[in-house]
Image 1 (cartoon, rainbow, N blue to C red):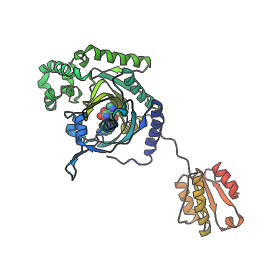
Image 2: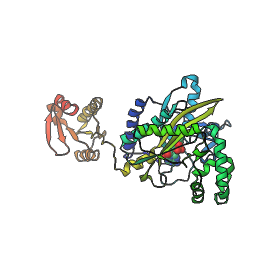
Image 3: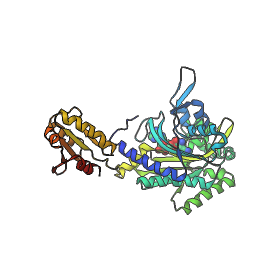
Image 4: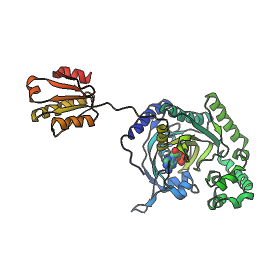
Length: 403
Ligand code: HAM
Protein backbone atom coordinates (compact mmCIF):
# COMPACT_ATOMS: atom_id res chain seq x y z
CA UNK A 1 0.00 0.00 0.00
CA UNK A 2 1.39 3.40 -0.90
CA UNK A 3 0.88 6.99 0.08
CA UNK A 4 -0.17 9.27 -2.75
CA UNK A 5 1.59 12.57 -2.22
CA UNK A 6 2.89 15.60 -4.11
CA UNK A 7 4.21 15.91 -6.74
CA UNK A 8 2.73 12.64 -8.18
CA UNK A 9 -0.75 13.43 -6.87
CA UNK A 10 -0.92 16.28 -9.44
CA UNK A 11 -1.23 13.73 -12.25
CA UNK A 12 -3.95 11.85 -10.34
CA UNK A 13 -5.91 15.07 -9.92
CA UNK A 14 -5.58 15.95 -13.61
CA UNK A 15 -6.72 12.45 -14.64
CA UNK A 16 -9.70 12.54 -12.30
CA UNK A 17 -10.73 16.05 -13.42
CA UNK A 18 -10.68 14.97 -17.08
CA UNK A 19 -12.74 11.86 -16.28
CA UNK A 20 -15.29 13.89 -14.28
CA UNK A 21 -15.74 16.11 -17.36
CA UNK A 22 -16.17 13.16 -19.75
CA UNK A 23 -18.45 10.79 -17.78
CA UNK A 24 -21.49 13.13 -17.80
CA UNK A 25 -21.32 13.29 -21.63
CA UNK A 26 -22.25 9.60 -21.56
CA UNK A 27 -24.94 10.09 -18.90
CA UNK A 28 -22.90 8.83 -15.91
CA UNK A 29 -23.22 10.32 -12.42
CA UNK A 30 -20.80 9.75 -9.55
CA UNK A 31 -21.37 7.28 -6.72
CA UNK A 32 -19.26 6.73 -3.60
CA UNK A 33 -20.03 3.43 -1.91
CA UNK A 34 -18.51 2.27 1.41
CA UNK A 35 -15.09 0.58 1.40
CA UNK A 36 -16.46 -2.12 3.70
CA UNK A 37 -19.34 -4.45 2.80
CA UNK A 38 -20.79 -7.72 4.06
CA UNK A 39 -18.58 -10.55 2.82
CA UNK A 40 -21.56 -12.37 1.29
CA UNK A 41 -22.02 -9.55 -1.23
CA UNK A 42 -18.66 -10.38 -2.82
CA UNK A 43 -18.83 -14.17 -2.56
CA UNK A 44 -22.26 -14.15 -4.23
CA UNK A 45 -21.55 -11.67 -6.99
CA UNK A 46 -17.86 -12.28 -7.86
CA UNK A 47 -18.20 -16.06 -7.40
CA UNK A 48 -16.81 -18.21 -4.58
CA UNK A 49 -14.44 -20.22 -6.80
CA UNK A 50 -12.60 -17.14 -8.13
CA UNK A 51 -9.08 -16.23 -6.95
CA UNK A 52 -10.34 -12.87 -5.69
CA UNK A 53 -12.81 -14.52 -3.29
CA UNK A 54 -10.73 -17.59 -2.42
CA UNK A 55 -7.36 -15.94 -1.83
CA UNK A 56 -7.38 -12.19 -2.06
CA UNK A 57 -10.03 -10.65 0.16
CA UNK A 58 -9.31 -8.86 3.44
CA UNK A 59 -12.11 -10.41 5.49
CA UNK A 60 -12.69 -10.20 9.23
CA UNK A 61 -15.43 -10.62 11.77
CA UNK A 62 -16.52 -7.45 13.55
CA UNK A 63 -17.29 -7.47 17.29
CA UNK A 64 -20.97 -8.04 16.40
CA UNK A 65 -20.06 -11.35 14.71
CA UNK A 66 -20.71 -10.10 11.16
CA UNK A 67 -18.27 -11.07 8.43
CA UNK A 68 -17.06 -7.93 6.64
CA UNK A 69 -14.70 -7.46 3.70
CA UNK A 70 -12.71 -4.52 2.37
CA UNK A 71 -14.02 -4.16 -1.17
CA UNK A 72 -11.79 -5.92 -3.72
CA UNK A 73 -13.62 -4.21 -6.61
CA UNK A 74 -16.39 -1.68 -7.21
CA UNK A 75 -19.09 -3.45 -9.23
CA UNK A 76 -20.65 -5.44 -6.37
CA UNK A 77 -21.21 -2.37 -4.15
CA UNK A 78 -22.69 -0.32 -7.01
CA UNK A 79 -25.03 -3.17 -7.96
CA UNK A 80 -26.03 -3.55 -4.29
CA UNK A 81 -26.94 0.14 -4.26
CA UNK A 82 -28.90 -0.17 -7.51
CA UNK A 83 -30.74 -3.28 -6.28
CA UNK A 84 -31.93 -1.17 -3.34
CA UNK A 85 -33.49 1.36 -5.71
CA UNK A 86 -35.90 -1.22 -7.10
CA UNK A 87 -37.47 -0.46 -10.49
CA UNK A 88 -36.01 3.08 -10.45
CA UNK A 89 -32.56 1.57 -11.07
CA UNK A 90 -33.38 0.72 -14.70
CA UNK A 91 -31.06 2.56 -17.08
CA UNK A 92 -28.98 4.19 -14.30
CA UNK A 93 -25.33 4.93 -15.09
CA UNK A 94 -22.85 5.46 -12.28
CA UNK A 95 -19.10 6.01 -12.11
CA UNK A 96 -16.71 5.72 -9.18
CA UNK A 97 -13.13 6.53 -8.29
CA UNK A 98 -11.64 5.03 -5.16
CA UNK A 99 -9.47 2.54 -3.32
CA UNK A 100 -9.90 -1.25 -3.61
CA UNK A 101 -8.11 -3.93 -1.57
CA UNK A 102 -6.71 -7.33 -2.60
CA UNK A 103 -4.28 -9.50 -0.64
CA UNK A 104 -2.16 -10.33 -3.67
CA UNK A 105 1.58 -10.88 -3.71
CA UNK A 106 2.87 -7.32 -4.10
CA UNK A 107 4.92 -6.75 -7.25
CA UNK A 108 5.27 -4.10 -9.95
CA UNK A 109 1.74 -3.08 -10.96
CA UNK A 110 0.14 -5.08 -8.16
CA UNK A 111 -0.71 -3.34 -4.91
CA UNK A 112 -2.74 -4.42 -1.90
CA UNK A 113 -4.51 -1.07 -1.81
CA UNK A 114 -4.94 0.20 -5.35
CA UNK A 115 -7.37 2.57 -7.03
CA UNK A 116 -9.95 1.98 -9.69
CA UNK A 117 -11.83 4.38 -11.87
CA UNK A 118 -14.88 2.49 -13.03
CA UNK A 119 -18.36 2.75 -14.40
CA UNK A 120 -21.52 0.64 -14.38
CA UNK A 121 -24.58 1.00 -16.61
CA UNK A 122 -27.68 -1.00 -15.77
CA UNK A 123 -29.01 -2.22 -19.10
CA UNK A 124 -30.41 -5.49 -20.39
CA UNK A 125 -28.11 -7.24 -22.90
CA UNK A 126 -27.51 -4.99 -25.90
CA UNK A 127 -24.37 -5.08 -28.09
CA UNK A 128 -24.50 -1.29 -28.62
CA UNK A 129 -24.40 -0.67 -24.85
CA UNK A 130 -21.28 -2.88 -24.57
CA UNK A 131 -19.58 -1.09 -27.46
CA UNK A 132 -20.46 2.32 -26.03
CA UNK A 133 -18.83 1.25 -22.76
CA UNK A 134 -15.63 0.21 -24.58
CA UNK A 135 -15.73 3.48 -26.54
CA UNK A 136 -16.01 5.44 -23.27
CA UNK A 137 -12.75 3.88 -22.06
CA UNK A 138 -10.89 4.58 -25.28
CA UNK A 139 -12.24 8.15 -25.14
CA UNK A 140 -10.85 8.54 -21.59
CA UNK A 141 -7.51 7.06 -22.60
CA UNK A 142 -7.12 9.39 -25.57
CA UNK A 143 -8.15 12.42 -23.48
CA UNK A 144 -5.43 11.51 -20.97
CA UNK A 145 -2.90 11.12 -23.78
CA UNK A 146 -2.46 7.32 -23.58
CA UNK A 147 -1.53 5.90 -26.98
CA UNK A 148 -0.86 2.32 -28.03
CA UNK A 149 -3.43 0.64 -25.80
CA UNK A 150 -4.82 -2.64 -27.18
CA UNK A 151 -8.45 -3.71 -26.75
CA UNK A 152 -8.98 -7.48 -26.53
CA UNK A 153 -12.49 -8.87 -26.53
CA UNK A 154 -14.31 -12.16 -26.19
CA UNK A 155 -17.65 -13.47 -24.94
CA UNK A 156 -18.66 -15.48 -21.89
CA UNK A 157 -22.01 -16.36 -23.53
CA UNK A 158 -25.20 -16.63 -21.49
CA UNK A 159 -25.79 -18.48 -18.20
CA UNK A 160 -27.51 -21.14 -20.35
CA UNK A 161 -24.23 -21.68 -22.28
CA UNK A 162 -22.25 -22.35 -19.11
CA UNK A 163 -22.84 -26.07 -18.74
CA UNK A 164 -21.99 -26.75 -22.42
CA UNK A 165 -18.85 -24.57 -22.24
CA UNK A 166 -17.66 -26.28 -19.04
CA UNK A 167 -18.27 -29.75 -20.49
CA UNK A 168 -16.58 -28.86 -23.79
CA UNK A 169 -13.51 -27.49 -22.01
CA UNK A 170 -13.28 -30.48 -19.61
CA UNK A 171 -13.49 -32.94 -22.50
CA UNK A 172 -10.82 -31.05 -24.43
CA UNK A 173 -8.54 -30.68 -21.36
CA UNK A 174 -8.89 -34.23 -20.03
CA UNK A 175 -5.94 -35.67 -22.03
CA UNK A 176 -3.67 -32.91 -20.66
CA UNK A 177 -5.03 -32.89 -17.11
CA UNK A 178 -1.78 -34.25 -15.60
CA UNK A 179 0.11 -31.21 -16.90
CA UNK A 180 -2.13 -28.77 -14.99
CA UNK A 181 -0.98 -27.14 -11.74
CA UNK A 182 -2.56 -28.19 -8.41
CA UNK A 183 -4.85 -25.16 -8.41
CA UNK A 184 -6.08 -25.95 -11.92
CA UNK A 185 -6.67 -29.59 -11.05
CA UNK A 186 -9.04 -28.31 -8.35
CA UNK A 187 -10.50 -25.75 -10.78
CA UNK A 188 -11.05 -28.48 -13.38
CA UNK A 189 -14.15 -29.67 -11.51
CA UNK A 190 -15.19 -26.51 -9.66
CA UNK A 191 -14.77 -23.88 -12.38
CA UNK A 192 -12.87 -25.08 -15.44
CA UNK A 193 -12.94 -21.65 -17.13
CA UNK A 194 -10.38 -20.47 -14.57
CA UNK A 195 -7.78 -22.75 -16.21
CA UNK A 196 -7.76 -20.32 -19.16
CA UNK A 197 -6.78 -17.55 -16.75
CA UNK A 198 -3.96 -19.44 -15.01
CA UNK A 199 -0.52 -17.86 -15.33
CA UNK A 200 1.44 -21.15 -14.86
CA UNK A 201 3.31 -21.94 -18.13
CA UNK A 202 2.18 -25.60 -18.19
CA UNK A 203 -1.49 -24.57 -17.82
CA UNK A 204 -1.09 -21.90 -20.49
CA UNK A 205 0.38 -24.53 -22.81
CA UNK A 206 -2.57 -26.86 -22.14
CA UNK A 207 -5.02 -23.99 -22.68
CA UNK A 208 -3.40 -23.13 -26.02
CA UNK A 209 -4.77 -26.39 -27.46
CA UNK A 210 -8.34 -25.61 -26.46
CA UNK A 211 -10.97 -24.71 -29.02
CA UNK A 212 -12.41 -21.18 -28.52
CA UNK A 213 -15.13 -21.03 -25.84
CA UNK A 214 -17.53 -19.71 -28.51
CA UNK A 215 -17.46 -23.12 -30.22
CA UNK A 216 -19.47 -24.55 -27.28
CA UNK A 217 -22.00 -21.69 -27.17
CA UNK A 218 -25.44 -21.22 -28.70
CA UNK A 219 -25.58 -19.53 -32.11
CA UNK A 220 -27.33 -16.50 -30.53
CA UNK A 221 -24.32 -15.89 -28.24
CA UNK A 222 -21.94 -15.94 -31.22
CA UNK A 223 -24.29 -13.58 -33.10
CA UNK A 224 -24.19 -11.18 -30.11
CA UNK A 225 -20.38 -11.09 -30.29
CA UNK A 226 -20.50 -10.61 -34.07
CA UNK A 227 -22.74 -7.59 -33.60
CA UNK A 228 -20.34 -6.15 -31.00
CA UNK A 229 -17.49 -6.53 -33.53
CA UNK A 230 -19.57 -4.95 -36.30
CA UNK A 231 -20.30 -1.91 -34.13
CA UNK A 232 -16.65 -1.60 -33.06
CA UNK A 233 -15.72 -1.62 -36.77
CA UNK A 234 -18.36 1.01 -37.40
CA UNK A 235 -16.72 3.29 -34.80
CA UNK A 236 -13.36 2.42 -36.39
CA UNK A 237 -12.09 1.20 -33.04
CA UNK A 238 -9.25 -1.29 -33.34
CA UNK A 239 -9.60 -4.48 -31.27
CA UNK A 240 -8.31 -8.02 -31.20
CA UNK A 241 -10.55 -11.05 -30.67
CA UNK A 242 -8.97 -13.18 -27.96
CA UNK A 243 -10.78 -16.54 -27.74
CA UNK A 244 -9.02 -17.33 -24.44
CA UNK A 245 -10.02 -14.17 -22.59
CA UNK A 246 -12.45 -15.13 -19.80
CA UNK A 247 -11.68 -12.56 -17.03
CA UNK A 248 -11.24 -13.52 -13.40
CA UNK A 249 -14.71 -12.72 -12.06
CA UNK A 250 -17.70 -15.01 -12.44
CA UNK A 251 -20.52 -12.50 -12.91
CA UNK A 252 -19.78 -11.94 -16.60
CA UNK A 253 -22.10 -12.86 -19.47
CA UNK A 254 -21.70 -12.02 -23.17
CA UNK A 255 -19.02 -9.42 -23.95
CA UNK A 256 -15.81 -9.27 -21.91
CA UNK A 257 -12.74 -7.17 -22.68
CA UNK A 258 -9.38 -6.05 -21.40
CA UNK A 259 -7.27 -3.10 -22.42
CA UNK A 260 -3.55 -3.74 -22.23
CA UNK A 261 -0.55 -1.45 -22.54
CA UNK A 262 3.05 -2.36 -23.29
CA UNK A 263 4.59 0.08 -20.80
CA UNK A 264 3.17 -1.97 -17.91
CA UNK A 265 5.40 -5.04 -18.01
CA UNK A 266 4.05 -8.35 -16.65
CA UNK A 267 0.86 -6.83 -15.17
CA UNK A 268 -0.08 -5.24 -18.48
CA UNK A 269 -3.87 -4.95 -18.04
CA UNK A 270 -4.87 -1.33 -17.70
CA UNK A 271 -8.60 -1.87 -17.69
CA UNK A 272 -11.03 -4.77 -17.63
CA UNK A 273 -14.74 -4.97 -18.04
CA UNK A 274 -17.72 -6.64 -19.50
CA UNK A 275 -21.39 -7.35 -19.34
CA UNK A 276 -22.66 -9.02 -16.17
CA UNK A 277 -25.65 -10.55 -14.47
CA UNK A 278 -25.65 -10.44 -10.68
CA UNK A 279 -28.38 -11.98 -8.54
CA UNK A 280 -29.08 -10.09 -5.33
CA UNK A 281 -32.06 -10.45 -3.04
CA UNK A 282 -33.81 -12.79 -5.46
CA UNK A 283 -33.49 -10.37 -8.34
CA UNK A 284 -31.14 -10.48 -11.33
CA UNK A 285 -29.44 -7.20 -12.19
CA UNK A 286 -27.97 -6.89 -15.66
CA UNK A 287 -25.46 -4.30 -16.68
CA UNK A 288 -22.19 -3.49 -18.34
CA UNK A 289 -19.13 -1.76 -16.94
CA UNK A 290 -15.39 -1.53 -16.57
CA UNK A 291 -12.70 -0.61 -14.09
CA UNK A 292 -9.34 0.94 -14.85
CA UNK A 293 -6.39 0.53 -12.47
CA UNK A 294 -5.19 4.06 -11.72
CA UNK A 295 -1.69 3.07 -10.52
CA UNK A 296 -1.19 1.28 -13.84
CA UNK A 297 -2.63 4.23 -15.74
CA UNK A 298 -0.07 6.51 -14.02
CA UNK A 299 2.72 4.15 -15.15
CA UNK A 300 1.49 4.38 -18.76
CA UNK A 301 1.24 8.19 -18.54
CA UNK A 302 4.70 8.53 -17.02
CA UNK A 303 6.15 6.27 -19.73
CA UNK A 304 4.71 8.69 -22.29
CA UNK A 305 6.21 11.60 -20.30
CA UNK A 306 2.79 13.11 -19.64
CA UNK A 307 2.90 15.54 -16.73
CA UNK A 308 0.19 17.40 -14.85
CA UNK A 309 -0.35 21.10 -15.63
CA UNK A 310 1.92 23.34 -13.55
CA UNK A 311 0.05 24.84 -10.56
CA UNK A 312 -0.15 28.66 -10.39
CA UNK A 313 3.01 30.15 -8.91
CA UNK A 314 2.16 31.98 -5.69
CA UNK A 315 2.64 35.60 -4.72
CA UNK A 316 4.85 35.81 -1.62
CA UNK A 317 4.18 38.52 0.95
CA UNK A 318 7.22 39.77 2.86
CA UNK A 319 6.43 41.90 5.93
CA UNK A 320 9.26 43.73 7.65
CA UNK A 321 8.11 44.58 11.17
CA UNK A 322 4.98 43.94 13.24
CA UNK A 323 2.78 46.65 11.68
CA UNK A 324 3.42 45.39 8.18
CA UNK A 325 2.88 41.79 9.27
CA UNK A 326 -0.68 42.62 10.39
CA UNK A 327 -1.42 44.48 7.13
CA UNK A 328 -0.02 41.75 4.88
CA UNK A 329 -1.76 39.01 6.88
CA UNK A 330 -5.06 40.68 5.96
CA UNK A 331 -3.94 41.32 2.36
CA UNK A 332 -3.16 37.61 1.94
CA UNK A 333 -6.78 36.69 2.69
CA UNK A 334 -8.10 39.36 0.30
CA UNK A 335 -5.86 38.07 -2.49
CA UNK A 336 -6.94 34.45 -1.95
CA UNK A 337 -10.60 35.48 -2.04
CA UNK A 338 -9.83 37.12 -5.40
CA UNK A 339 -8.38 33.84 -6.70
CA UNK A 340 -4.65 34.52 -6.22
CA UNK A 341 -2.43 31.85 -4.62
CA UNK A 342 -0.34 33.51 -1.98
CA UNK A 343 1.78 32.76 1.05
CA UNK A 344 3.89 34.47 3.67
CA UNK A 345 6.07 33.62 6.65
CA UNK A 346 3.34 34.01 9.27
CA UNK A 347 5.78 34.57 12.11
CA UNK A 348 7.82 37.09 10.09
CA UNK A 349 11.63 36.80 10.06
CA UNK A 350 14.59 38.54 8.47
CA UNK A 351 14.35 39.83 4.88
CA UNK A 352 16.92 37.22 3.83
CA UNK A 353 15.03 34.30 5.42
CA UNK A 354 11.75 35.46 3.92
CA UNK A 355 13.21 35.82 0.42
CA UNK A 356 14.66 32.32 0.76
CA UNK A 357 11.14 31.06 1.63
CA UNK A 358 9.78 32.91 -1.43
CA UNK A 359 12.31 31.10 -3.63
CA UNK A 360 11.49 27.75 -2.04
CA UNK A 361 7.79 28.33 -2.78
CA UNK A 362 8.79 29.21 -6.39
CA UNK A 363 6.93 32.50 -6.05
CA UNK A 364 6.38 34.54 -9.20
CA UNK A 365 6.26 37.82 -7.34
CA UNK A 366 7.06 39.13 -3.88
CA UNK A 367 5.30 42.02 -2.15
CA UNK A 368 7.62 43.72 0.37
CA UNK A 369 6.36 46.11 2.99
CA UNK A 370 7.93 47.74 6.06
CA UNK A 371 7.30 50.83 8.19
CA UNK A 372 8.60 53.20 5.47
CA UNK A 373 6.19 51.76 2.85
CA UNK A 374 3.27 51.86 5.29
CA UNK A 375 3.96 55.55 6.08
CA UNK A 376 3.99 56.33 2.32
CA UNK A 377 0.93 54.15 1.51
CA UNK A 378 2.87 51.96 -0.96
CA UNK A 379 4.05 48.37 -1.45
CA UNK A 380 7.21 47.19 -3.16
CA UNK A 381 6.43 44.67 -5.92
CA UNK A 382 9.38 42.48 -6.87
CA UNK A 383 9.43 40.28 -9.95
CA UNK A 384 11.13 37.08 -8.76
CA UNK A 385 12.32 36.12 -12.25
CA UNK A 386 14.22 39.26 -13.26
CA UNK A 387 14.44 41.01 -9.89
CA UNK A 388 12.73 44.21 -11.21
CA UNK A 389 11.04 46.26 -8.45
CA UNK A 390 8.37 48.96 -8.47
CA UNK A 391 6.41 50.88 -5.86
CA UNK A 392 2.62 50.68 -6.15
CA UNK A 393 -0.26 51.96 -4.06
CA UNK A 394 -2.94 49.48 -2.96
CA UNK A 395 -5.37 49.89 -5.91
CA UNK A 396 -2.51 49.54 -8.42
CA UNK A 397 -1.12 46.52 -6.55
CA UNK A 398 -4.51 44.79 -6.57
CA UNK A 399 -4.93 45.60 -10.25
CA UNK A 400 -1.55 44.08 -11.02
CA UNK A 401 -2.00 40.91 -8.92
CA UNK A 402 -5.68 40.19 -9.59
CA UNK A 403 -5.90 41.38 -13.19
P1 HAM B 1 -10.48 -6.43 -12.58
O1 HAM B 1 -9.95 -6.91 -13.88
O2 HAM B 1 -10.39 -7.36 -11.43
O3 HAM B 1 -11.99 -6.02 -12.85
O4 HAM B 1 -9.76 -5.09 -12.19
C1 HAM B 1 -9.77 -3.98 -13.07
C2 HAM B 1 -8.41 -3.32 -13.11
O5 HAM B 1 -7.99 -2.98 -11.78
C3 HAM B 1 -7.29 -4.19 -13.63
O6 HAM B 1 -7.27 -4.20 -15.04
C4 HAM B 1 -6.07 -3.50 -13.07
O7 HAM B 1 -5.70 -2.38 -13.87
C5 HAM B 1 -6.57 -2.99 -11.73
N1 HAM B 1 -6.11 -3.89 -10.64
C6 HAM B 1 -6.68 -5.03 -10.23
N2 HAM B 1 -5.99 -5.56 -9.21
C7 HAM B 1 -4.95 -4.73 -8.96
C8 HAM B 1 -3.88 -4.70 -8.01
N3 HAM B 1 -3.74 -5.64 -7.07
N4 HAM B 1 -3.01 -3.66 -8.06
C9 HAM B 1 -3.14 -2.68 -8.97
N5 HAM B 1 -4.14 -2.65 -9.89
C10 HAM B 1 -5.04 -3.65 -9.89
C11 HAM B 1 -12.83 -5.54 -11.89
O8 HAM B 1 -12.49 -5.18 -10.80
C12 HAM B 1 -14.27 -5.42 -12.36
N6 HAM B 1 -15.06 -4.91 -11.23
C13 HAM B 1 -14.38 -4.53 -13.57
C14 HAM B 1 -15.79 -4.37 -14.04
C15 HAM B 1 -16.63 -3.35 -13.77
N7 HAM B 1 -16.46 -5.25 -14.77
C16 HAM B 1 -17.70 -4.80 -14.97
N8 HAM B 1 -17.80 -3.65 -14.34
